[in-house]
Image: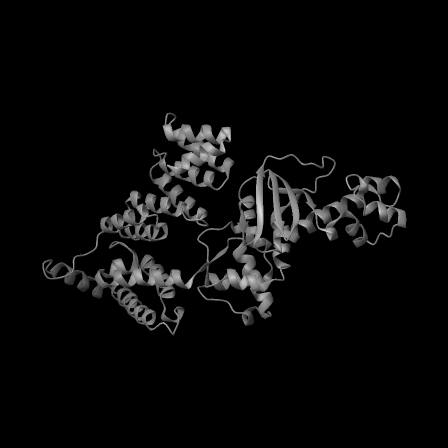
Length: 450
């Protein structure tokens, strides 16, 4: 398979245990990485400048001509041990060189873009005598910081950035001061600039890409934002103030504030291309509606007057209020058309209008599970459903299928087992468990085609 940057695949290793071999090909260079419990244990490369002898020289070791020939010959499997036997290096230095070689070969792939890769589960380490045992996150971060090709970064990060809904908070302690500062600016709802961090444009792009590659931030493409604006513009035409803010009629002032600040940042006219006149007009109308809704609902007197106005409206002449059930039905239509982003958005609207209805929340989680890159958010939503309905195995089965589709067999099995703990005879859970434990790839493929 092809991937823009291998870290997008390696992110899976940071929240689940993986053991096996990763093969990366780029420009006729093949590199192999061996992992045990998501720790890097060994690297192999066909690149001439990544052979053992070059790393020996990097440690300032000067060898006689005949040893130089031996190093650069085809005989590589025991060259380190042979140098120890000849007294050129000791075992401790050999281990340091091998760890450095393992890390540098790994970083070589992180620095590349548009690579071909293949993952093979449960392959044994071919070098039984050596285990670098390197934790992944620090090495990944070092590789991301050493990327030189900022042109590809500009291509990948195309649009405004926003903080991801969920990422492991422990990642933050590994960030540099500049990376953490950029993250905090984004969390405050502002787009950081190179001048904010006192960095050159290239170094600034690497900071952003580091956060992006780790899944801590995501881009909102201009076309996606425009599509969301069009949907919200249509909503404003018929919705009441509670629907415009996406809150229930029993919402607290804190809930109203949170909804307002989130929406006003998202749909502020400055976020849309000034040359797109239609987008500017829609954004202005949406922004005005959001502000009007906020000012009315935050004032108890205005809110009560507005509520009375709605009650006095004649249904035959005035607009009909949109119900959560209508949004849910629209979401199911989008879901059946495999337009999962739109479906998740509509299910979320239904849930905001009726927060007590777990069905709306469940379907939001199902839709999110079908969108690549939304695994964390889908898991959060579905686990909340499981807490609300502790008798229901369905949320765990959706998570099991999602992780099985993405090749995370151990995590998938954990959710299958949680589903079976609630319903030991559940046919779908039993079938998926058998397929996962049997590692029948064709069977799994057929299972997910249904």
